[in-house]
Image (cartoon, rainbow, N blue to C red; front, top):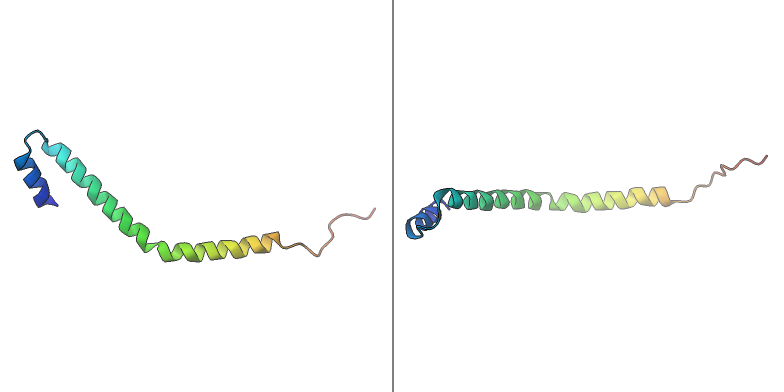
Length: 70
């Protein structure tokens, strides 16, 4: 990527080096974050299954009658 940035800086004089480095940083940061997101993919499936089980327990009707019979 740094080689490509150097080629851009050499061939396109209208582009400033700080603009090229900003774009390079953005691309590298996006690639790192995409890798992190892909690493957590299997855990997201497990979390969804766990949340479904929790909500199933919450939605289960209670057998206890909490209303007073005064």
